[in-house]
Amino acid sequence: MQKICIVFDRLRTEEKLLQKNAEELGYETSMVDAKITSFDTDSKPENFEFGDVVLERCVSYYRGLHFTACLEFMDIPVINRFDVANTCGNKMITSMLLKKNNIPTPKTYFSFSAETALDNFEKVGYPLVIKPIIGSWGRSVMPVKDKDTAEAVIENRQVTDGPQDRIYYLQEMIDRPPRDIRVITVGDQAISAMYRKSSGGFKTNIALGADPELCEITKEMEDLCEKTSKAVGGGILGIDLMEDKEKGLVVHEVNNTVEFKGLVKVSKKNIPKEMIDYAIHNIK
Amino acid sequence: MNCPECDANMNIPEDAAVGEIVSCGDCGADYEISKKEGSNIELKEAETVGEDWGE
Image (cartoon, rainbow over all chains, first blue to last red; front, top):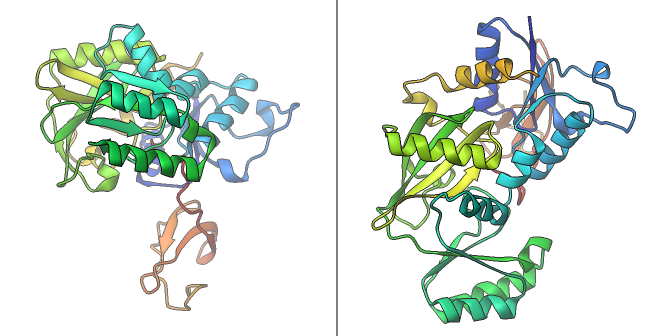
C-alpha cells in the first residue's frame, strides 16, 4: 500500500480533509510540518517520513517552493512540481506562458522602474490594475483610475522597496460582472468550480469575504482549464477566470496551492479525495 | 489551558491537532499547537501572515 505525505506549515481545514480522505482510502498518511524539517546536501528519503508521494501544502509560497526543491533533490515525487509552483507563484511568468499558449488572458504590461511604469500608465491610459508579481489573497492588487493614484501607488512602492517592488505588473481592467470564477483542476481536468462574488469592492477573493457560489462547469471552461493546466505543467491547480463582456472567458491567474474549504461544502465532487487519488496514481 | 498572553481560559477542541492554530477568545492572540500528548498541550506563538502567504 502506498504512503502519502502532506507537507504543511499551518494546519488548515484543507490539510485535515486531505489527511482524512487519504486515511479513509486506506493509505498510510504522514503529516510533516515544513517549519521544523531540515535538509542537507546528503539528505536521503529514508531519513524522513515522506512516503511515496508528497502533497506540498504550505501557506507560505517561498517556503513551499524551496521545500519542493529539497524533495525533488531527493527524487521524491511532489505535487505540484517545482517548475509548476515557480510558474504559478509569479504572475508575470504565468501571464507570458498563458499568452504564449494562446490562452485568452488580460493584456498585461511589464516595466522595471518607477519612471517606465508611470510612462506605461500614461501611454496605455486608465484604468489599469496594478498587482504585485508574487502575492495572494488580493494583497496590493489595486485598480488605478487616474494619474494621481498611479503616482501615489508607485511612490508607495519606492518606499517599501522590496525586491518585487521594482517589477511593475499592470493589467487591463476587464469589463466583467462583479464576480470571477475559480476552477479547481486535478490532472488537467476541471473537477469543481465556484463563482466568487465581490462583496461590494473591486476584489473577489474568498479570503477577503467574497461569497462563494457553485458554478456549473461548461465545455468551454473545461477545455480552457485543460489547456491552461497543461501550459503551466499540470498537477493540482486553482484557475481563475473572468467573464469579459466582449472577449468571453479569460484566464487571469493560476494558483499553485489551491484552497478549497469553501467550495468543498457545495461541490458535487469530493475535492480532497480527487486530489489524493491523483497523487497516488501519479507516483512515478 | 490558559492563554499565555492574557491568562484567560482557552477552550481547545479535543480533535485539535499539532500544527493547528487556536485563538484566545478573550484577547484574540493566535497560537499554534506545537505538542499534544493526550490532554497535555503545548502552544507557541503563531506566525504572522507573511507577504508570500496565500494560494
